Image 1 (cartoon, rainbow, N blue to C red):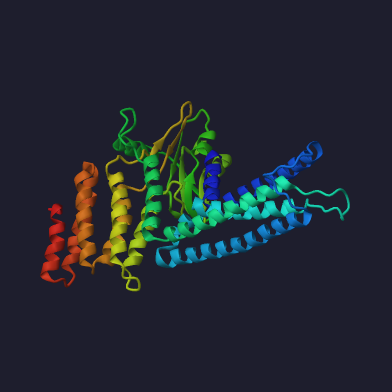
Image 2 (image 1 turned 135 degrees about the vertical axis):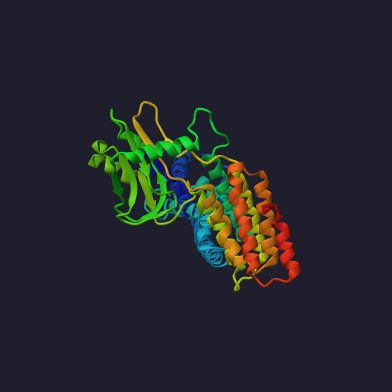
Length: 436
């Protein structure tokens, strides 16, 4: 359940509505508090505050109406600009990077300030009463002063937003944001070094094979979707005195069809309907892939931007090489580390969970294969790709180097089937001479 809550919290943080909603609720509470403060000051103090609003009821209404009216107009304009930015990002970069805009804290904060100021002004406006109305006259001077202050803050936010949105639609900013999110995820998923007490990859493979030797039951999905997380806590909660092995058959980011096998459990005697439902609930599916645990998705976003830049309709090889640089930076972080452990235990539990992870070979394939296929006609792109693969091979752990060498050899094979000028062919071959 904890991982499911984390998944929901991650989605809420990435949404465009969550922070503005929080700020709007805060503005509502502030309006009620300030009006109550004004009522208290009016009853206990007869002095005049020089820093507070000094007009009458009509003046207070005019100020609040002007702030509310102008803010709702500006908010509509800002939302329109945001939608245009999303459309540009989808068509120019990739639909997969839209989340980087909706999750942008700067955009969320500005929208929240605008909507919050509008809400505050409306709530304060309803408390203003003149001497001609029923009851005693009431002008919330301090509340109106705070509304003017929020309006000034909103003007500053508008200036910031124009600068920020112009900067955020640059490809370098988009690529950097995706790369930074993926960097943090790699740090969480991949090991810096092997712990002496941890099982090696060979030990884990042998343990997985031994589990397959017994009779088992396969668990199928009841719905379709992309696997976003696996909640291990739900699997360990079903522990009893019998040793149980649960193996997930799908990797984070895979699309699961309803009825497809998602997990296997040993032995048969440990299978219960309650445990089966817990296994299904532990595999959290969503409408789209998420960067919550999916390293491959981060690489896919950058590769998609590079492939889009290499298309004839865009024809922007410089953007492609920039994305290759960021991809190489991420792959360099991966190939210097050991892969994540596939076997998970918990103290005082007889449950063993075997997780499926994408191999380094699969991650490298996601990062470079499509770029090589679509960029094979550009000498600069192919030379740059071969050179960076050589640099990665020089820093990779020995067990990962062969994967990079194979990518370099595929570049050479692609070159042999293209009609390059001899000088261009020699240039690419020279950049890939490290594969020999």
